[in-house]
Length: 235
Image (cartoon, rainbow, N blue to C red; front, side, top):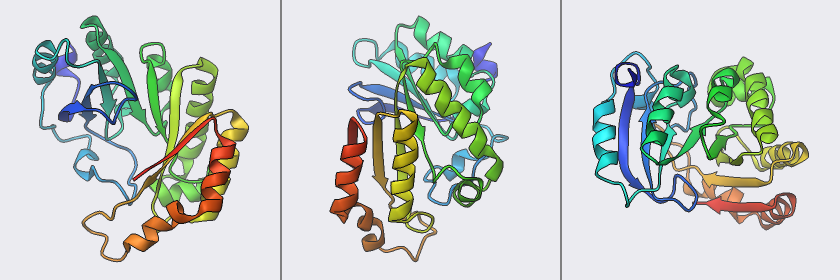
């Protein structure tokens, strides 16, 4: 049974920003293989602890939100860590909700199992797609090849998806965003966003001006608008 396998860190009961043009419930899955320095959900990283919500909590919420909520987004953490994700998605679809997914793409074989079950994917690009840069951004250099495989799966599946990058100035500079944009557009990605990093509690060094430099660079913004069919900033 799904309720005995899925580990839910928390549930956001209402969101208008996690699934394009949809009012959604967001399910934060417990567990993540990466240790991104800009992570706001560090409590979700450990896959071996029990989350703060149970499957029955989600079912009860969705049953009482029919007609008000359009979709459910499985986020994290990293939802692809949990083998029971396909069954959870099937159960939500049976309740007649659309399903979205947030992922960094670290486990392409798990992504393949849910691609025909979701209608939209938010795909995080942490850094330029090189092993040493992904090691700095995530703590695991080897996973960059898996990210590339997952991205290619999305492109071949013709599913609606976006790529987005959190612009943490401690690990990225403006030249990196140019490189990411060139790589993604060269592969055929059409929708890209850059997101402002807001210093986490343990970051006592980064200033707002450091975070803003990406969004004040008019040359960069013009370049990104030219590169992608859809581009925007998220602050």
